[in-house]
Image (cartoon, rainbow, N blue to C red; front, side, top):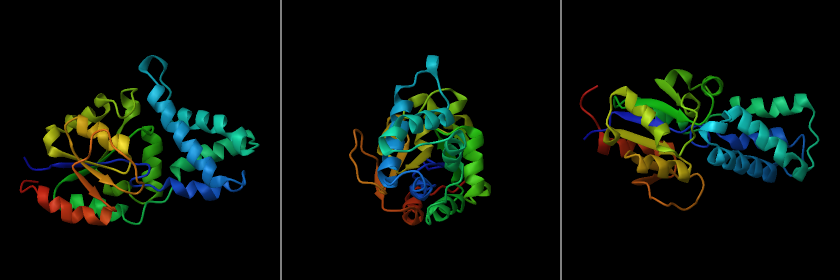
Length: 223
């Protein structure tokens, strides 16, 4: 069965949140460590969130920042907190992001985004990065008040009248690629960060420039 839909993760896959190091440098002498702690706590909070006590991703990002700030000697005023949280909507695209999206579009494998981000934040982030017009649709965890890697989040893609075997999911996050694989999707892991897997993705690529060659193996003949 040919691939009809290519779904991309947002943060860490299309958008480079490492750019936040420069923003954090104003507030802490340990910006790299602070960003790593912020990101890890952000992900921990999504994994412990349940529907009955759901917090959207903007609030998760805010809480994670508030929790890690004292550890890195960050004395933040309300305007500083707002600036830092808002920075997640003002990240650069990875240099290879556009090539990856275009590779899907050129083969009639409709490019979409599936993200934990709030829909409005994701839209703003893609617009800032110059990618908004390149993706056909954005799917957000916030729509169903659950976070990846829960299967129902991935199942949102099936609303586009595709079967799981017709979806290729692309992510630089190991836990995300694992979740997509368990949902029955074909998966590609972009090895921006080395890590391990509970369920291995089908394929690995070093960056999204390699996606075009890989997609030829899945090429569809019907738009």
